[in-house]
Length: 264
Image 1 (cartoon, one colour):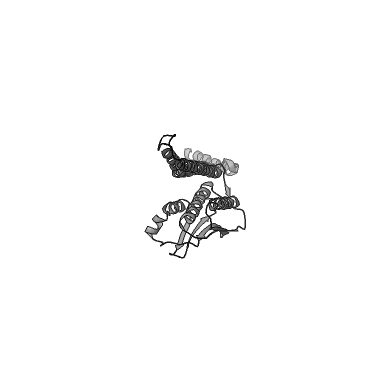
Image 2 (image 1 turned 60 degrees about the horizontal axis):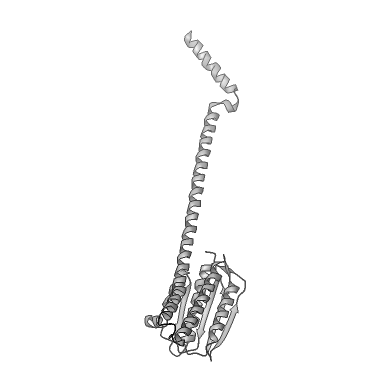
């Protein structure tokens, strides 16, 4: 009798489950619970991953900012710091009453150069981007200014710019410093009659070509050091620019720098 009642109860329970709505059935409740847990786990993973990626991006930004600060500090130290030291040494060289006019003239010229370097640094760093046209105008203006004191040397300036791209201010400043160094070297040391500067865009790159028809030099370690190119090579590496020197004694010299215009 007890067994019969148990069997009947089980049968009635099974019949009730069969007639129950789907959302009250055990298999549905279990499946729904598993799905809910899975969704919670996936959302948690997504949140953790998003936070990690955000943190990683912030670290990358901070790293780039630190690199920019180091480049700015190095630029100010190399140019402004050394020039100010020269001015101080000139002024400390003797009493103002007996200081030679030549010393005062050198100090004045160094002060003007210092102000120019400060303006160039500010020009680049107070902007988020520098246009290729603006950069090109700066190089042309600098070359014309430097050639005013060099009689017998002409400037041939060529621009081939298809669109007005922009690039990183730090890259613009380093590339401008390279142009300054090469132009000054050509004017002071080449003994040539023509300074040729070409700035062009091609295949997503900005190419700077500076050449002269002077006495040239041997492209080796001794020649590079003698011609003051180590700082130029260092700056080119700093901005991941391709750098090529071409020269032979008596055949002039040319220096080409190619810089990617990608946002990085």
